[in-house]
Amino acid sequence: MPKLLVLYMSRKDEDDFLEYVRSLGNLLILPGTSPGSDFAPVDSLPEPSQDESTRRFWLQYTSSGIPLVTEQVPEKGLFVVDGFQSPVIEFWRSWMVSQVMLPGGIQTDMNYVDDERHDLAKKPAEFRNWFGSIDGWIRKNYTRLGIYIFLGPGARKFREEGGILQGR
Image (cartoon, rainbow, N blue to C red; front, side, top):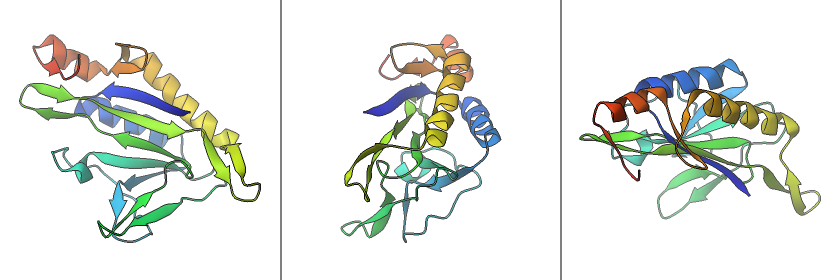
C-alpha cells in the first residue's frame, strides 16, 4: 500500500521541506525522467511551471541497500524510475496559476518485489524510518486539511491573503 500525502507548499515551504530532507543525509534529488538510465542528480529545482519536468522529482534514499531501478519508456524515448522497486519518494511540487495554488505531494511504496525470493518484501528499515521522519516533520510543521492533505505555513498565508487552493 503506497503512502501518500497531498501538500500545498509555497516556494518557501518547499525550500524548508527540502532543507529538512537534506539534513537527514543520504539524499539524491533526481529528475522525473532522464534521457538515459543514469539519472543525474539536480542541485536546485527550477521554477515550477506547466511543464511536468519542472514539477516532478524523485527523492532517493542512498543508504537503503537496494538499488535505483529504472526502465525505458520507448514511445517517449526516456527513462523513468520504478518507484515501487526503488528506495525513493516521488515528489511533485505545488504550483501557481494566477491566484490558484495547485497541490503537490509525496508518495512512496513501503514494499518491493525481492527478486531472490520472488515475493513481496518490506523495503529496508532505514528507508522506512527515513520516510517516517519526513512524514513526522510534515505533520508537525503543516496544518492538516484532511486525512492526508496538509497545508504549509507559506501556503496558509497565501490562502489567508485571498489565494485559492485548488480542490479545497
